[in-house]
Each structure stands twice: as C-alpha cells, then as structure tokens.
Image (cartoon, rainbow, N blue to C red; front, side):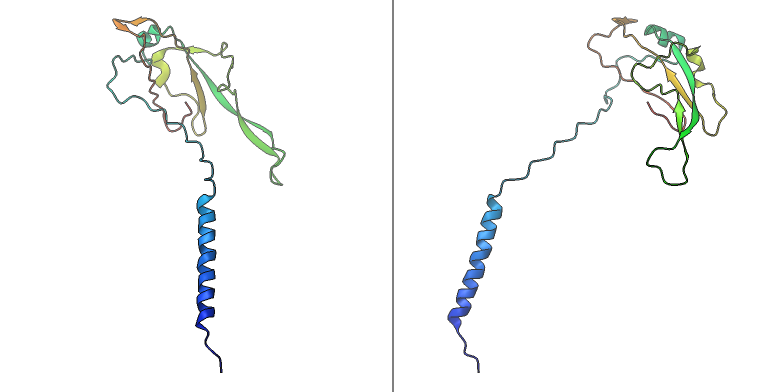
Length: 163
C-alpha cells in the first residue's frame, strides 16, 4: 500500500510554479525584436478638384509644355533560354526596344500629332507600343501660375499598360 505524502506534493507544486515564474520573468525581460521598417506611404494623386487642367491629347495642351508625342512599336523577339530554364525550353521571349530604361534614345522615333494618340495601332492580338513625350512646365499656362503647383498626370489605356 502506498503512503500519501502531502509534503512531497506541495514541494513538487511549488517547484513547478517557481520554474514557470522564472521562465515568465526571463521572457518578459528579453529585449524586444527589432521592428521591421514601415513601408513607404503610397503615392496617390490629390483628392482636391484640380486648379487647372491641360489635355495633352490636344495640340494646344502638348504645345503648352513644349512637348511632342513619339511612338514606336515594341516587337516580340525570340532569344536563348535563361541558364536556369527547365529542360526542353531552348528559347525565351522579350520585347525590343527596352524604352523604359533610363537614358534610352528615342530621337529616331516618329512623331505623331496629339490627336493621333487615340488611333488604333498594331495588328492586334499581342501588340505593344511605346508612347513618349518630354514635358517642360512653363512658369505660366494661360493665366495660371505653375510655381508651387503639383502636376498630376492621368493616363487612359486600353486593356493593359505600364506607365
């Protein structure tokens, strides 16, 4: 027959509670892990009504900024597969020209009139076109002073675009 030893049970319970308290205190005193940096705020256009609107799809609008529209078809070209491609893939596809890269020379591109921006281009199905212009913000457009104003561009695209 087993003898009951209430003193042992109390001692075991006390040791268990003490162990838990030490672990809790150790966790509570551990330094906090460093916080991840906050992501940047999204860049969104102002929600106020614009002070002045210029339509860059008109000759007058693009002329106010001394701009000139240019366009070029981006062709799909076949090239070698990447070094880590799966077996059986011997080719890859890309576009040319890579006009989105900094310093790209578009001086040989044909210029188009602003009203021609809405004209359909390409043969359809899979077709890509670059549209470019350089804008110089003048000190004044009509009677609107541009100093300190925030320029917001709105682009309308058909189906898919990278702006």
